[in-house]
Length: 91
Length: 417
Image (cartoon, rainbow over all chains, first blue to last red; front, top):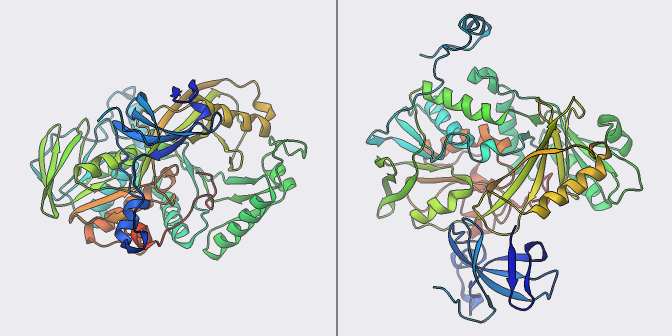
């Protein structure tokens, strides 16, 4: 359990939020030309990193806006939050 | 040759105050090379090593464990065993395991305290009723014992359940698998470790894998904290850390690792002699032989390796428990903990070869791996030894995420994921 600093609402309890999985997975530009392997990669394969992970979150019980987060999954420490469309503040 | 455990060895050792029991397994230093190496010394990894040695005559094998054996999810689950899954592939897999459980204490000469006390699943709305009836029929067609119970029959089987129609999620019925039950989770790891060790398997604890050496598309060995180990066959049974090992070999898996929590109460006298699970409200409870209520909570929705979950998940589960069992309202919870479970998009496991020759994965068991331990070990050993899956785990290959032939047990299994 942790406190999340929503970029729109400020600090709120994590139970107000919904995790949306790995961020920056780009939707294929030409879906009709994808092979089965490429579809599997896009739909199912995940980095599932132990360490610094970039992910999407939704403030589902608040402003209902989506945003991105950089979090250390080994200890749940949040490194940064940033709005959708913005560049990650950390490499 | 180890001494067999029996009533006579128990009496004999009583005379020396039980201070002279032999070690159940050795503590060897790793050899330079093995025929096969299993990564992960939990129930699944140890069972795999045991069946490789026993059924496939591979004696020069090692199990590498970064902590102590059975210290991960094997020692953190709620010990429930059942096989009442909806789909044919899952039913085959889990019932294979259940059949091995039934004779496992005798086979291992180790009391795993397997108790077929039955598992009851509750229905709380009309869709639950339809789903559970459908699953009961599917189970019976697959030769798995299952019966559907009315609300009155649920009450009769487990009298402490609140079956009043006034509660928020009233009990409308349930299913019962009588062959299902529980086992002592630590004993399963210890029994398999003792059995494998006796056949010459090296169980190496405090040995973390740091890298996988490849020559093109073939594995050559493992970098570990105890040095390099050469081998041509690596079987990974690393549960929540499967993706971490896969990344070392340059593979990506369709997994997300999430915290799953459980908790136990103070010990009390016998009050519940079965296992009761309820998907819709996510509450399941049984009672250990020590008298503690063993309660399973749900997973968090975010990826984490921290082995602790969110408080609101526990709170939600306890709310549901208290509504179904008002008698527990004054119980105090003694301990709470988390384990990291690796979940596949279709909530079914992977027991499979990979695109890299000699690298095998047994992962994706998600929230329900304990019940499969003996079957999983047996089928994974078959897959590693023959470089081909057994017919029971053929459907659980990694390629199903490319072909689309998923085994979709999400919500269709007896428990919510």
